[in-house]
Image (tube, rainbow, N blue to C red):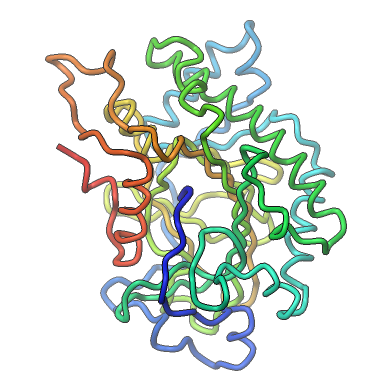
Length: 357
């Protein structure tokens, strides 16, 4: 997910948070074909996802050990759980609190920030659902609130809520903290590939776009019939996810098996995006993941998507291509890849498959 242009004349999906109060079972537009329906329980992972201590990763005394863990995590799963990130549990509690309080606002208050302009033109930013581009598209059982947070010059403060009162300050501080994490991780990814330590940081230049997306997954009367979020991979360089620690739901695919991602209180999930897979020429993998719903509990998450300048081209790093490691992905402009993401996501396919050689 990254920056995109509004699309005209599209269907406006219902707000699931409101829909769930009146239905005993999911409407047909949300029901997944029987052969594709999720196993809500998921499978237990054959080995645990690595927990990487970022404070040790940044220390010269311990960075080698943590880099071994980091490399193993990315080779096996494409993601890791980050602790030692410098965010106090009390602050993370405030982040989740303002997220929850926003979704508790009356519908008419939330719709002041709708992602439909004049009720008919879809835009990436704002409150609502994903764009509907096909009558056959299966809708996800979730509502979203998406904001550009970086660069600051791109912030549209008319879409930043005034309620709860601390929302803007909390999101601004969280953005700064996550940028520090991103830079540290990117330096270590470059190190793993024997590139200049600032190589990937420089790819996220002053025109790169960072989105914050607040996800709300209401309880669902029949969670085995819907997706909270359909299977996909992220169209980002990297993604940082803060997950509500009161209910699970994130699942990860490996070797055609879906595994439950464990919840570690106050840990952040960091995963590789499609752009990192392409730039690393396949060394890092962008994991396919989905979200399942819960019959009794709502679920919340806050996701930070780090994407390149829309005008910048995505392609394998030249130093990582040789006779033993031929180019595996074709060149594509970032904004064109984002357009491809919208099309493939709507039909349940993967955009990265469209650029593989």
